[in-house]
Image (cartoon, rainbow, N blue to C red; front, top):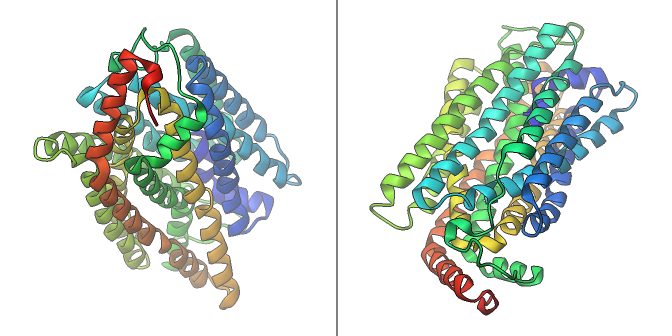
Length: 433
């Protein structure tokens, strides 16, 4: 939620600090860069120390930083950007460790369902970030309040995790609880992950998803607002406060499509597993390729019909969100329990480094370059951002290809992981990379 409250009031932030598209895109880029740099560190810690304490401290830290950033004045935009980097460090602790706790509590279809519930929280939180940020600004008349509400929820969640969430023994769901006495060295873990082809290809596919969702999360509300300016249904927000309607609608769509995507993904994989053991990566591949089609259509219809654009967004996001929980489940099947936190962390690192670490800034940079090349006008502000965003569906298609590659090696890597789990149960020191 904290990640996207900024996106919900991005037009106001640009006006307040006097920054252009590329500088505004830097907010998300700095956030993601710090997120991905911290992820391997938390992955290492999560495989060796109390995960519950790391989670709780990380949530409370990022909540306090978010609250503090709401008091930064317009002369210190660099400090506001820095604060987003600190928030990314805090969020990295949560994203790297939480899935591994779920992996140690459940197995098979139950684990898929529980991971689906967990990953539904990503689009739900993203959508609520838009809605909460926009609503807080509308209610108070000041966009700074968008950053003062969610920290209260974050600190409450961090406290509840500290006292009520269990920290299961690593491998307990895989019949390793109580019998795991040693852990493989970190360098051996990294070598094993690098040789795991299903893990590598699914991580690259995850990067494609991150590229698209990162760019869309920041720029789609702005793009739709500019489309309405071109249609002359709204006026540019030069002096008066910027309209939050598009952020609210996009946030609501993200919440609904997140729920639908996760539910459809869980149900589809459960059904397809009865026909093929490669169902998980194949379902992800098909959903990615389908999503690319509808995301392309957004930029075709937006100039004439905002409603049509929202329909394309709805279908495209549903198909895109379908693979989040499935990707995490693929990792749980092909990586042994003692390496999962490290695997999740480095998958996050790779997906952010190649994905949303640069996509918001890159889209803003391309948009600014196009506006400078051609005559600056309301129409070109709209078209330049649309042309820049057209990069996303091509990256999504590439992600679909990576999921197809994952399907080729999935069964071999899964069987290898199962054999290693059996070795761990008998003699941890016998496990080979």
